[in-house]
Length: 450
Image 1: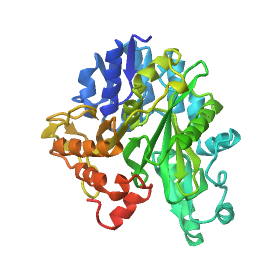
Image 2: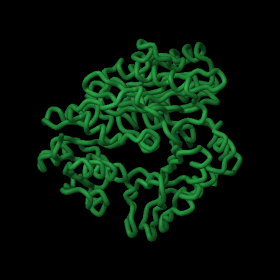
Image 3: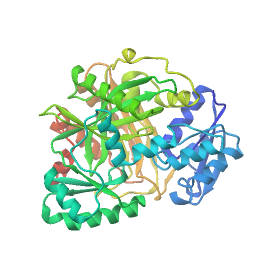
Image 4: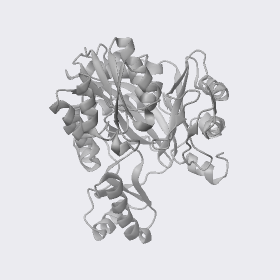
Protein backbone atom coordinates (compact mmCIF):
# COMPACT_ATOMS: atom_id res chain seq x y z
CA UNK A 1 0.00 0.00 0.00
CA UNK A 2 1.08 3.59 -0.62
CA UNK A 3 2.47 5.62 2.27
CA UNK A 4 1.84 9.02 0.64
CA UNK A 5 -0.57 10.24 -2.06
CA UNK A 6 -0.75 13.64 -3.74
CA UNK A 7 -4.22 14.92 -4.68
CA UNK A 8 -4.35 16.75 -8.00
CA UNK A 9 -7.60 18.55 -7.31
CA UNK A 10 -9.44 21.00 -5.06
CA UNK A 11 -12.78 21.51 -3.33
CA UNK A 12 -14.99 18.78 -2.00
CA UNK A 13 -13.40 15.93 -3.95
CA UNK A 14 -9.94 16.78 -2.58
CA UNK A 15 -11.41 16.72 0.93
CA UNK A 16 -13.16 13.42 0.16
CA UNK A 17 -9.91 11.77 -0.99
CA UNK A 18 -7.97 13.09 2.00
CA UNK A 19 -10.58 11.61 4.37
CA UNK A 20 -10.28 8.21 2.71
CA UNK A 21 -6.49 8.36 2.92
CA UNK A 22 -6.56 9.27 6.62
CA UNK A 23 -8.78 6.26 7.33
CA UNK A 24 -6.31 4.07 5.43
CA UNK A 25 -3.28 5.49 7.26
CA UNK A 26 -1.93 7.19 4.13
CA UNK A 27 -0.24 10.60 4.29
CA UNK A 28 -1.45 13.23 1.80
CA UNK A 29 -0.07 16.16 -0.17
CA UNK A 30 -2.47 18.92 -1.20
CA UNK A 31 -1.77 21.10 -4.22
CA UNK A 32 -3.43 24.49 -4.48
CA UNK A 33 -3.62 27.64 -6.56
CA UNK A 34 -2.96 31.11 -5.17
CA UNK A 35 -6.73 31.57 -4.89
CA UNK A 36 -7.04 28.41 -2.75
CA UNK A 37 -4.39 29.11 -0.11
CA UNK A 38 -7.11 29.16 2.57
CA UNK A 39 -9.01 26.16 1.18
CA UNK A 40 -10.09 23.33 3.48
CA UNK A 41 -8.19 20.62 1.61
CA UNK A 42 -4.96 22.55 2.16
CA UNK A 43 -5.38 22.55 5.94
CA UNK A 44 -6.47 18.90 6.11
CA UNK A 45 -3.51 17.44 4.23
CA UNK A 46 -0.25 16.69 6.03
CA UNK A 47 1.72 18.65 3.42
CA UNK A 48 0.82 21.20 0.76
CA UNK A 49 2.31 22.94 -2.26
CA UNK A 50 1.25 25.96 -4.30
CA UNK A 51 1.30 25.04 -7.99
CA UNK A 52 0.39 28.31 -9.69
CA UNK A 53 -1.89 31.27 -10.14
CA UNK A 54 -5.65 31.38 -9.62
CA UNK A 55 -6.80 30.33 -13.07
CA UNK A 56 -7.13 26.61 -13.75
CA UNK A 57 -4.82 26.68 -16.76
CA UNK A 58 -2.07 28.09 -14.56
CA UNK A 59 -2.56 25.63 -11.71
CA UNK A 60 -4.89 22.61 -11.66
CA UNK A 61 -4.46 22.03 -15.41
CA UNK A 62 -0.67 22.35 -15.26
CA UNK A 63 0.40 18.70 -15.27
CA UNK A 64 4.12 19.38 -14.94
CA UNK A 65 3.67 21.50 -11.80
CA UNK A 66 1.50 18.82 -10.19
CA UNK A 67 4.04 16.09 -10.95
CA UNK A 68 6.89 18.21 -9.58
CA UNK A 69 4.94 18.85 -6.37
CA UNK A 70 4.39 15.10 -5.91
CA UNK A 71 8.08 14.44 -6.46
CA UNK A 72 9.13 17.24 -4.12
CA UNK A 73 7.20 15.70 -1.23
CA UNK A 74 8.06 12.12 -2.23
CA UNK A 75 4.50 10.99 -2.94
CA UNK A 76 4.16 7.57 -4.55
CA UNK A 77 0.84 8.13 -6.32
CA UNK A 78 -1.46 10.89 -7.57
CA UNK A 79 -5.24 10.87 -7.23
CA UNK A 80 -6.80 13.09 -9.92
CA UNK A 81 -10.33 13.35 -8.44
CA UNK A 82 -12.80 14.39 -11.15
CA UNK A 83 -12.63 17.22 -13.68
CA UNK A 84 -9.37 19.05 -14.42
CA UNK A 85 -6.78 16.41 -15.47
CA UNK A 86 -8.70 13.31 -14.36
CA UNK A 87 -9.44 12.20 -17.94
CA UNK A 88 -6.27 13.52 -19.53
CA UNK A 89 -4.29 10.63 -21.06
CA UNK A 90 -1.12 12.71 -21.20
CA UNK A 91 -1.29 13.32 -17.46
CA UNK A 92 -1.70 9.60 -16.77
CA UNK A 93 1.31 8.87 -18.96
CA UNK A 94 3.33 11.70 -17.40
CA UNK A 95 2.80 10.20 -13.97
CA UNK A 96 4.04 6.81 -15.16
CA UNK A 97 7.05 8.37 -16.86
CA UNK A 98 8.01 9.95 -13.52
CA UNK A 99 7.54 6.76 -11.47
CA UNK A 100 4.27 7.97 -9.97
CA UNK A 101 1.18 5.76 -9.89
CA UNK A 102 -1.80 7.43 -11.52
CA UNK A 103 -4.88 6.36 -9.53
CA UNK A 104 -6.99 5.59 -12.56
CA UNK A 105 -6.72 3.79 -15.91
CA UNK A 106 -3.79 3.80 -18.29
CA UNK A 107 -3.39 6.73 -20.66
CA UNK A 108 -4.29 4.73 -23.78
CA UNK A 109 -7.59 3.62 -22.20
CA UNK A 110 -8.48 7.20 -21.27
CA UNK A 111 -7.65 8.29 -24.83
CA UNK A 112 -9.72 5.47 -26.33
CA UNK A 113 -12.82 6.27 -24.30
CA UNK A 114 -12.30 10.02 -24.50
CA UNK A 115 -12.50 9.85 -28.28
CA UNK A 116 -16.26 9.46 -28.64
CA UNK A 117 -15.97 8.16 -32.20
CA UNK A 118 -13.53 5.41 -31.20
CA UNK A 119 -15.60 4.66 -28.09
CA UNK A 120 -18.71 4.11 -30.22
CA UNK A 121 -16.83 1.77 -32.56
CA UNK A 122 -15.31 -0.14 -29.65
CA UNK A 123 -18.65 -0.67 -27.94
CA UNK A 124 -20.35 -1.66 -31.18
CA UNK A 125 -17.64 -4.26 -31.81
CA UNK A 126 -18.12 -5.57 -28.26
CA UNK A 127 -21.85 -6.07 -28.83
CA UNK A 128 -22.95 -3.15 -26.66
CA UNK A 129 -25.90 -1.25 -28.22
CA UNK A 130 -25.00 2.27 -29.38
CA UNK A 131 -27.16 5.24 -30.33
CA UNK A 132 -27.90 5.34 -34.07
CA UNK A 133 -25.49 7.78 -35.68
CA UNK A 134 -22.49 8.14 -37.95
CA UNK A 135 -18.71 8.35 -37.90
CA UNK A 136 -16.73 11.61 -38.01
CA UNK A 137 -18.10 14.17 -40.43
CA UNK A 138 -15.87 15.38 -43.25
CA UNK A 139 -17.93 18.25 -44.68
CA UNK A 140 -21.31 20.00 -44.67
CA UNK A 141 -22.37 17.79 -47.58
CA UNK A 142 -21.40 14.69 -45.61
CA UNK A 143 -23.40 15.96 -42.62
CA UNK A 144 -26.49 16.59 -44.77
CA UNK A 145 -26.27 13.11 -46.28
CA UNK A 146 -25.86 11.36 -42.91
CA UNK A 147 -28.64 13.41 -41.30
CA UNK A 148 -31.10 12.22 -43.96
CA UNK A 149 -30.20 8.63 -43.09
CA UNK A 150 -30.35 9.09 -39.32
CA UNK A 151 -33.46 11.27 -39.34
CA UNK A 152 -34.17 14.49 -37.47
CA UNK A 153 -33.85 15.61 -34.74
CA UNK A 154 -30.13 14.92 -34.40
CA UNK A 155 -27.26 15.90 -32.15
CA UNK A 156 -23.90 17.12 -33.43
CA UNK A 157 -21.32 16.11 -30.83
CA UNK A 158 -17.64 16.87 -30.37
CA UNK A 159 -15.38 13.83 -30.58
CA UNK A 160 -13.42 15.11 -27.57
CA UNK A 161 -16.51 16.37 -25.70
CA UNK A 162 -17.58 15.65 -22.17
CA UNK A 163 -19.55 17.03 -19.24
CA UNK A 164 -22.42 18.06 -21.50
CA UNK A 165 -20.24 20.39 -23.58
CA UNK A 166 -19.76 20.38 -27.33
CA UNK A 167 -23.33 19.29 -28.12
CA UNK A 168 -25.77 20.97 -30.53
CA UNK A 169 -29.37 19.96 -31.21
CA UNK A 170 -30.51 20.16 -34.86
CA UNK A 171 -34.27 19.90 -35.40
CA UNK A 172 -34.45 20.39 -39.18
CA UNK A 173 -32.34 20.47 -42.33
CA UNK A 174 -32.61 24.26 -42.46
CA UNK A 175 -30.44 24.54 -39.34
CA UNK A 176 -27.79 21.99 -40.22
CA UNK A 177 -25.27 23.95 -42.31
CA UNK A 178 -24.95 26.82 -39.84
CA UNK A 179 -24.99 24.63 -36.74
CA UNK A 180 -22.39 22.29 -38.22
CA UNK A 181 -19.91 25.14 -38.59
CA UNK A 182 -20.72 26.50 -35.12
CA UNK A 183 -20.25 23.03 -33.62
CA UNK A 184 -16.78 22.77 -35.12
CA UNK A 185 -15.82 26.22 -33.80
CA UNK A 186 -17.16 25.36 -30.35
CA UNK A 187 -15.30 22.04 -30.28
CA UNK A 188 -12.05 23.75 -31.28
CA UNK A 189 -12.46 26.39 -28.58
CA UNK A 190 -13.38 23.93 -25.81
CA UNK A 191 -11.24 20.90 -26.65
CA UNK A 192 -8.72 22.04 -29.28
CA UNK A 193 -10.26 19.40 -31.55
CA UNK A 194 -12.84 20.34 -34.16
CA UNK A 195 -13.86 16.79 -35.07
CA UNK A 196 -17.61 16.15 -34.75
CA UNK A 197 -20.07 13.36 -35.45
CA UNK A 198 -23.85 12.93 -35.29
CA UNK A 199 -26.26 10.84 -33.27
CA UNK A 200 -30.02 10.48 -33.30
CA UNK A 201 -31.59 12.77 -30.69
CA UNK A 202 -33.55 10.45 -28.42
CA UNK A 203 -36.51 11.99 -26.59
CA UNK A 204 -38.36 10.85 -23.46
CA UNK A 205 -35.31 8.97 -22.23
CA UNK A 206 -33.72 8.28 -18.89
CA UNK A 207 -30.02 8.90 -18.27
CA UNK A 208 -28.87 5.74 -16.50
CA UNK A 209 -25.26 5.07 -15.56
CA UNK A 210 -23.56 2.07 -14.02
CA UNK A 211 -20.64 2.08 -11.60
CA UNK A 212 -17.87 -0.41 -12.24
CA UNK A 213 -14.71 -1.47 -10.44
CA UNK A 214 -12.03 -3.43 -12.27
CA UNK A 215 -8.79 -4.65 -10.74
CA UNK A 216 -5.47 -5.59 -12.38
CA UNK A 217 -6.28 -9.31 -12.34
CA UNK A 218 -9.22 -9.36 -14.76
CA UNK A 219 -11.95 -9.06 -12.12
CA UNK A 220 -14.82 -6.70 -12.95
CA UNK A 221 -17.77 -5.86 -10.71
CA UNK A 222 -20.75 -3.63 -11.50
CA UNK A 223 -22.17 -1.85 -8.45
CA UNK A 224 -25.65 -1.25 -9.83
CA UNK A 225 -27.03 1.85 -11.49
CA UNK A 226 -27.66 5.53 -10.84
CA UNK A 227 -30.46 7.60 -12.33
CA UNK A 228 -29.06 10.95 -13.49
CA UNK A 229 -32.01 12.13 -15.57
CA UNK A 230 -32.69 15.33 -13.60
CA UNK A 231 -30.57 17.71 -15.67
CA UNK A 232 -30.48 21.26 -16.90
CA UNK A 233 -28.66 21.83 -20.20
CA UNK A 234 -26.92 18.46 -19.90
CA UNK A 235 -25.67 19.28 -16.39
CA UNK A 236 -26.82 16.92 -13.65
CA UNK A 237 -28.74 18.35 -10.69
CA UNK A 238 -30.01 15.29 -8.81
CA UNK A 239 -28.84 11.68 -8.85
CA UNK A 240 -30.28 8.61 -7.17
CA UNK A 241 -29.67 4.91 -6.75
CA UNK A 242 -31.29 2.60 -7.54
CA UNK A 243 -33.26 4.05 -10.45
CA UNK A 244 -37.03 4.07 -9.82
CA UNK A 245 -37.64 2.56 -13.30
CA UNK A 246 -35.04 -0.24 -13.24
CA UNK A 247 -36.25 -3.62 -12.02
CA UNK A 248 -34.09 -6.66 -11.32
CA UNK A 249 -34.38 -8.01 -14.87
CA UNK A 250 -33.40 -4.72 -16.50
CA UNK A 251 -30.64 -4.21 -13.94
CA UNK A 252 -29.12 -7.54 -14.90
CA UNK A 253 -29.09 -6.44 -18.56
CA UNK A 254 -27.28 -3.22 -17.60
CA UNK A 255 -24.80 -5.18 -15.50
CA UNK A 256 -24.02 -7.70 -18.24
CA UNK A 257 -23.48 -4.98 -20.86
CA UNK A 258 -21.36 -2.88 -18.50
CA UNK A 259 -19.07 -5.75 -17.63
CA UNK A 260 -18.76 -6.61 -21.33
CA UNK A 261 -17.89 -2.97 -22.14
CA UNK A 262 -15.34 -2.78 -19.32
CA UNK A 263 -13.55 -5.92 -20.39
CA UNK A 264 -13.54 -4.80 -24.02
CA UNK A 265 -11.18 -1.93 -23.17
CA UNK A 266 -9.16 -3.81 -20.50
CA UNK A 267 -10.19 -1.21 -17.95
CA UNK A 268 -8.63 -0.85 -14.50
CA UNK A 269 -9.94 1.22 -11.59
CA UNK A 270 -13.28 2.90 -10.97
CA UNK A 271 -15.31 3.99 -13.98
CA UNK A 272 -18.81 4.77 -15.10
CA UNK A 273 -20.70 3.69 -18.21
CA UNK A 274 -23.55 5.98 -19.24
CA UNK A 275 -26.64 4.94 -21.17
CA UNK A 276 -29.84 6.44 -22.51
CA UNK A 277 -32.88 4.30 -21.68
CA UNK A 278 -36.24 4.45 -23.47
CA UNK A 279 -38.92 3.27 -21.07
CA UNK A 280 -41.51 2.75 -23.82
CA UNK A 281 -39.38 0.48 -25.98
CA UNK A 282 -37.41 -0.94 -23.02
CA UNK A 283 -34.18 -0.36 -24.96
CA UNK A 284 -30.98 1.28 -23.84
CA UNK A 285 -27.94 2.59 -25.69
CA UNK A 286 -24.32 3.24 -24.74
CA UNK A 287 -23.58 6.97 -24.56
CA UNK A 288 -20.08 7.27 -23.09
CA UNK A 289 -17.65 5.96 -20.50
CA UNK A 290 -16.23 8.22 -17.80
CA UNK A 291 -12.75 6.99 -16.91
CA UNK A 292 -12.71 8.51 -13.44
CA UNK A 293 -14.65 8.89 -10.21
CA UNK A 294 -18.05 10.51 -10.71
CA UNK A 295 -19.41 13.44 -8.69
CA UNK A 296 -22.40 11.28 -7.76
CA UNK A 297 -20.43 8.29 -6.44
CA UNK A 298 -21.77 8.69 -2.84
CA UNK A 299 -25.25 7.36 -3.70
CA UNK A 300 -23.64 4.10 -4.81
CA UNK A 301 -21.58 4.01 -1.62
CA UNK A 302 -24.75 4.34 0.45
CA UNK A 303 -26.65 1.50 -1.25
CA UNK A 304 -23.70 -0.90 -1.57
CA UNK A 305 -21.66 -0.10 1.55
CA UNK A 306 -18.51 0.01 -0.62
CA UNK A 307 -16.09 2.94 -0.35
CA UNK A 308 -15.23 3.72 -3.96
CA UNK A 309 -12.31 6.03 -3.21
CA UNK A 310 -10.62 3.45 -1.01
CA UNK A 311 -11.06 0.84 -3.71
CA UNK A 312 -9.60 3.17 -6.32
CA UNK A 313 -6.52 3.41 -4.15
CA UNK A 314 -6.35 -0.34 -3.43
CA UNK A 315 -6.65 -1.23 -7.13
CA UNK A 316 -3.91 1.26 -8.01
CA UNK A 317 -1.77 -0.40 -5.32
CA UNK A 318 -2.25 -3.71 -7.19
CA UNK A 319 -4.68 -5.26 -4.73
CA UNK A 320 -7.43 -7.57 -6.04
CA UNK A 321 -11.14 -6.98 -5.46
CA UNK A 322 -12.36 -8.78 -2.36
CA UNK A 323 -15.92 -9.27 -3.63
CA UNK A 324 -17.60 -10.75 -6.70
CA UNK A 325 -20.67 -9.74 -8.69
CA UNK A 326 -22.92 -12.08 -6.73
CA UNK A 327 -21.87 -10.32 -3.52
CA UNK A 328 -23.31 -6.98 -4.66
CA UNK A 329 -26.71 -6.34 -3.10
CA UNK A 330 -28.29 -2.90 -3.38
CA UNK A 331 -29.90 -2.02 -0.04
CA UNK A 332 -32.18 0.97 0.44
CA UNK A 333 -32.42 4.17 -1.57
CA UNK A 334 -30.04 7.12 -1.83
CA UNK A 335 -30.46 10.59 -3.36
CA UNK A 336 -27.88 13.31 -4.02
CA UNK A 337 -28.56 17.00 -4.66
CA UNK A 338 -25.77 19.11 -6.11
CA UNK A 339 -25.49 22.39 -4.25
CA UNK A 340 -24.24 25.15 -6.53
CA UNK A 341 -23.23 28.72 -5.80
CA UNK A 342 -25.42 30.38 -8.41
CA UNK A 343 -28.28 32.85 -8.67
CA UNK A 344 -31.79 32.19 -10.00
CA UNK A 345 -30.59 32.88 -13.52
CA UNK A 346 -28.02 30.09 -13.00
CA UNK A 347 -25.05 32.47 -13.11
CA UNK A 348 -22.16 31.46 -10.81
CA UNK A 349 -21.91 33.31 -7.51
CA UNK A 350 -18.73 34.02 -5.59
CA UNK A 351 -18.14 35.70 -2.25
CA UNK A 352 -17.73 35.13 1.46
CA UNK A 353 -19.77 32.47 3.26
CA UNK A 354 -21.16 34.41 6.20
CA UNK A 355 -23.07 31.53 7.76
CA UNK A 356 -22.81 27.81 7.10
CA UNK A 357 -24.59 24.92 8.78
CA UNK A 358 -24.58 21.36 7.44
CA UNK A 359 -27.56 19.10 8.18
CA UNK A 360 -27.04 16.00 10.29
CA UNK A 361 -28.78 12.80 11.33
CA UNK A 362 -28.59 9.13 10.36
CA UNK A 363 -27.67 8.50 6.72
CA UNK A 364 -27.24 12.22 5.95
CA UNK A 365 -23.97 13.33 4.38
CA UNK A 366 -22.82 16.71 3.11
CA UNK A 367 -19.63 16.55 1.06
CA UNK A 368 -18.20 20.04 0.79
CA UNK A 369 -15.11 22.19 1.32
CA UNK A 370 -16.84 25.37 2.49
CA UNK A 371 -16.84 26.71 6.05
CA UNK A 372 -17.88 29.84 7.93
CA UNK A 373 -15.85 32.73 6.57
CA UNK A 374 -14.65 30.87 3.48
CA UNK A 375 -14.44 32.96 0.31
CA UNK A 376 -15.76 31.12 -2.73
CA UNK A 377 -13.45 32.11 -5.61
CA UNK A 378 -14.87 32.95 -9.06
CA UNK A 379 -12.38 30.86 -11.00
CA UNK A 380 -13.78 27.33 -10.73
CA UNK A 381 -16.90 25.20 -11.02
CA UNK A 382 -19.94 26.54 -9.18
CA UNK A 383 -20.65 23.30 -7.30
CA UNK A 384 -19.79 23.84 -3.63
CA UNK A 385 -21.25 20.72 -2.09
CA UNK A 386 -23.27 17.55 -2.43
CA UNK A 387 -26.09 16.70 -0.07
CA UNK A 388 -26.68 12.95 0.09
CA UNK A 389 -29.31 11.07 2.07
CA UNK A 390 -30.33 7.43 2.27
CA UNK A 391 -33.28 5.44 3.55
CA UNK A 392 -33.31 1.68 4.17
CA UNK A 393 -37.07 1.51 3.69
CA UNK A 394 -38.38 3.32 0.63
CA UNK A 395 -37.70 5.96 -1.98
CA UNK A 396 -40.51 8.09 -0.54
CA UNK A 397 -38.70 8.11 2.80
CA UNK A 398 -35.48 9.13 1.08
CA UNK A 399 -37.26 12.04 -0.61
CA UNK A 400 -38.74 13.17 2.71
CA UNK A 401 -35.31 12.92 4.33
CA UNK A 402 -33.80 15.02 1.53
CA UNK A 403 -36.46 17.69 2.06
CA UNK A 404 -35.68 17.77 5.76
CA UNK A 405 -31.94 17.98 5.09
CA UNK A 406 -32.37 20.76 2.52
CA UNK A 407 -34.48 22.76 4.97
CA UNK A 408 -31.70 22.42 7.56
CA UNK A 409 -28.86 23.35 5.21
CA UNK A 410 -27.80 26.98 5.71
CA UNK A 411 -25.47 28.80 3.31
CA UNK A 412 -25.59 32.58 3.68
CA UNK A 413 -23.50 35.18 1.89
CA UNK A 414 -23.63 33.67 -1.60
CA UNK A 415 -26.52 32.81 -3.88
CA UNK A 416 -27.23 29.10 -4.10
CA UNK A 417 -29.71 26.60 -5.53
CA UNK A 418 -31.04 25.06 -2.31
CA UNK A 419 -34.50 26.49 -3.01
CA UNK A 420 -34.48 25.01 -6.52
CA UNK A 421 -33.48 21.61 -5.17
CA UNK A 422 -36.31 21.75 -2.66
CA UNK A 423 -38.78 22.47 -5.46
CA UNK A 424 -37.41 19.54 -7.49
CA UNK A 425 -38.21 17.21 -4.60
CA UNK A 426 -41.82 18.41 -4.89
CA UNK A 427 -42.12 17.88 -8.66
CA UNK A 428 -44.75 15.23 -9.34
CA UNK A 429 -42.65 13.67 -12.09
CA UNK A 430 -39.72 13.34 -9.69
CA UNK A 431 -41.87 11.96 -6.89
CA UNK A 432 -43.27 9.21 -9.10
CA UNK A 433 -39.91 8.54 -10.75
CA UNK A 434 -41.09 9.04 -14.34
CA UNK A 435 -38.98 12.15 -15.01
CA UNK A 436 -36.76 12.19 -18.10
CA UNK A 437 -33.76 14.24 -19.22
CA UNK A 438 -36.15 16.85 -20.68
CA UNK A 439 -38.14 17.54 -17.51
CA UNK A 440 -36.13 20.52 -16.21
CA UNK A 441 -36.36 22.39 -19.49
CA UNK A 442 -40.12 21.80 -19.52
CA UNK A 443 -40.40 23.04 -15.94
CA UNK A 444 -38.35 26.16 -16.70
CA UNK A 445 -40.57 26.92 -19.69
CA UNK A 446 -43.60 26.76 -17.42
CA UNK A 447 -41.89 29.24 -15.08
CA UNK A 448 -41.91 26.88 -12.12
CA UNK A 449 -38.18 26.40 -11.77
CA UNK A 450 -37.46 28.94 -9.03
